[in-house]
Image (cartoon, rainbow, N blue to C red; front, side, top):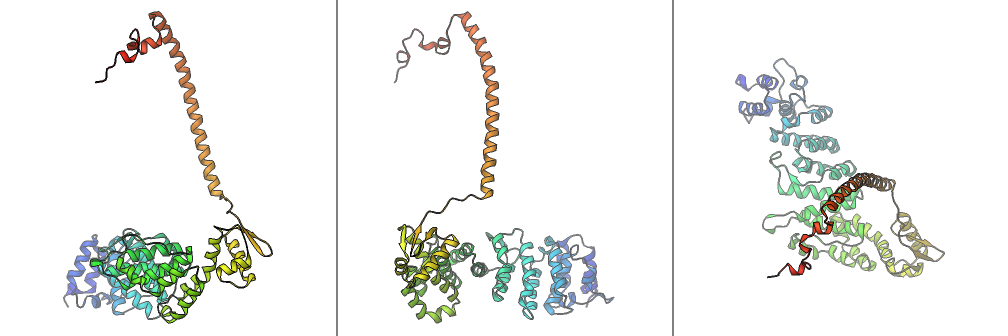
Length: 439
């Protein structure tokens, strides 16, 4: 091996270079591609571990090359704490000079975690997904790997706030060259699944919709999009009692495919036909279970009576428990009473219960302390503006009075009234009509 292709030579360049771009070129051009990681993962000639000498922030690019090489060939494996520390303190701008090494690092982290506990990778990948893109709204393959592990381990609560704070609006192809169209679909689909699992219905709908409406070449349809559409419709039934229409730019072929599924029949019967809903679920139970949608379907079925009751509030003021039970398919008046009580406590409806009836009422108007404070601040601001205007008007009035007296004395000496001064054309002419001709 040539001296320049040694870890000691590379270590020298790492510690003396002031240009990450030049250092990246040096490492790639000096070390042969076939044996590059083997050289980078070796100790220094002195026996020292180069990672114990390098500063993870100052020497981030070189540290990345060595760390990713060790994880890749599984030689002198660093601890999870060392990996986490690097991802937290490294100079991200240096890492962006070597996106292929970042990709290798991420894949190696996932592989290492899968060998023991996949959940170990979640904090590390989340840190990279937050720091590595130039903007939090940019999608990378790190995002996709993060969501896959969260879904596999059902660690949905660990990613909820990340999904709430970082909606994706762009892609970062230059930072992760291996990013593909399906990464976008997988990320948004799994984000919707994760949010639905923690009852974040509205945000889950948003992520599912992004997946469903993602444009594709030649109007092709991905199976991921169809699965997202199935879950979107069920989430909408749970959260609002009906399925909302999709944007007009949604692939028409995808909608046709959905209409040929049992999910469409379920949506059409919801919520007013409980017997039909139960028959569909019994008939398609194996199919629904295989697609992992039984949980959403059961929740939708459980909430169907609530949506029926809510519709009744739009038509009736007072109803007996028996009448409501017949409308929603509940035979026990005690169950109807419990349902109404839970809906009132949850704020879904407003009303009062008697022994056998319920009287619905309009929701009371409530203002939060923040809303009241906001209105008061606005009123105080307007009062100050009004005070300033009155003060300015007072000054102007005094000035106008003085100016008017002076002007009147001048007009009096000239023997001409204000009207004559302002409208000389009307004096002795008999009005406007004698002066103006319309062609």
